[in-house]
Length: 328
Image 1: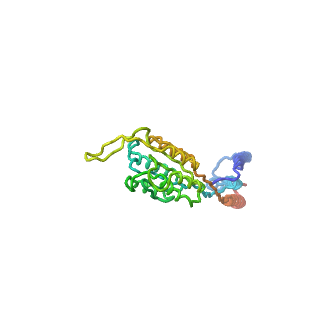
Image 2 (image 1 turned 90 degrees about the vertical axis):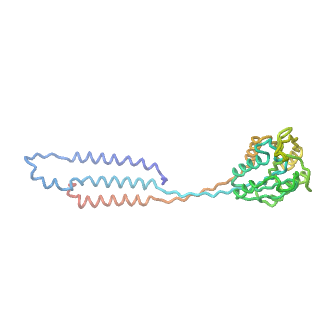
């Protein structure tokens, strides 16, 4: 409950003044009488009327208090809001080639990329997000969806070997563009993550970037891999052995893709820097949410006004009937 005019509560100070005046008047009206014995007044002392003579001031005080509350206009407020999200459509295009198993990230590049991307997805509940994976070829693992639980489960199922090995960056980017080209979102974004150079596929990366530009799709490219050499697991008859492999991220091509589409190129050399990159992208691509609030108020002054009326009516009737003898 809230009050439209709470300043009226200052009028409650009238009540103690009114009660004080009543007490003062009662004392002034009291007289003294000397008698030799009180035996003749015994029946009168058993009557409750003298004790009830103060009921009138009680009723009057309650009436004034209720009237003041009514003047303050008590109200109940029912509110709700409509949230409209302009929305951003995002497709994550992730390289799952064999080189993504290198362990310069924890536990490796592929798993680190998955885990950090899943945290990114969880932090953006209002956006439609899809997933494209690529290696020697590319396909859509999950189309654009607001059901992020499904997306995350499909992302967790991604592993190396799902498609032929290789690094078809152009094909991965083109597939992601195809998923976004018909989108009516205010902003369309691709996050392209790879650790190598384009070495297969029928669409060159720069051509795919030009297509993305035509559809107003912004591409953030992420080169993943440390500088120099990285430990790469190799299956041998004697179990898993590690070989140091050179890290070959085509930073020139990735930078050009980002420049063409109005995005930005990032280099991730470990889990922490990759997480920071996703956080940076998250800040640059925040969805704009417009909130419209509605309030419905219900006036509650009438019950208090009725209480005041009933108290004043009761006081008038009692003073002129039952309490008439006690007050004279």
